[in-house]
Length: 135
Image (cartoon, rainbow, N blue to C red; front, side, top):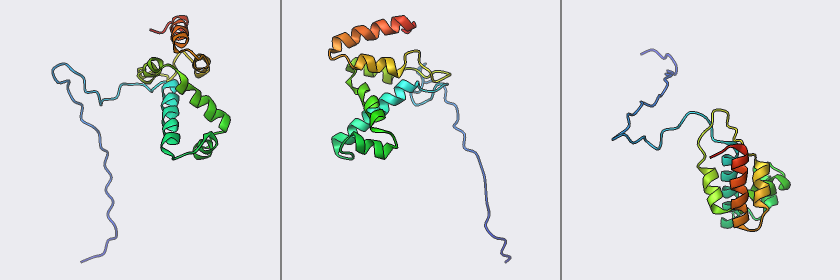
């Protein structure tokens, strides 16, 4: 018996395309494009808020150290959690875009989040979407 050394095998796994069942698309299939940046940042904000809630981090400074971000940036990100729940849901379910850019910026969303009344936030959100031609 000869000793040839280790044997290496390379292969590429590719998912097999699935046809829709009864005309309904598989929700686990990804659409082309990337999620808008505002969607990702809001998702991060929600996760960071959860980390504080469960005790994985004690404050924004701790989150900054864990995520290699400044406290100021963490504060900016966390500001998005002040948005009315309906606005957050809408942002979290934005469809993927080919460029990853959504016409409404994070800065504009933080301005809305600074409003104390959720009703005022909703009004500003509708106006901002109309301004940018977003449905």
